[in-house]
Image 1 (cartoon, rainbow, N blue to C red):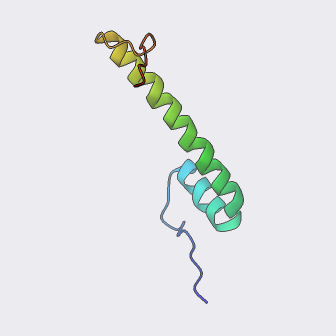
Image 2 (spheres, one colour; image 1 turned 90 degrees about the vertical axis):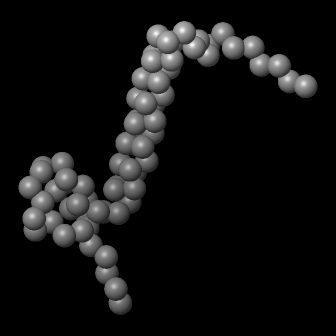
Length: 68
C-alpha cells in the first residue's frame, strides 16, 4: 500500500510546517483550511480588482444588463 505524506524534515517556516503536519495527521481539517483560504484569496483578489477597475474608470456596479 502506498502512503502519501508531506516530508517535514527540511521545512523551516512555521506556517509551512503547520500545514505539512496537518496534512499528515488530519486530512479533513487540511481540506477545510484549503477551502477557506481559497475563498478568502478569491474575495481579496476580487475586491482588489474592483478597486483597480474603478480607479481606471470601469465601474461595473452600475452596469445595465440587457438580455435579448
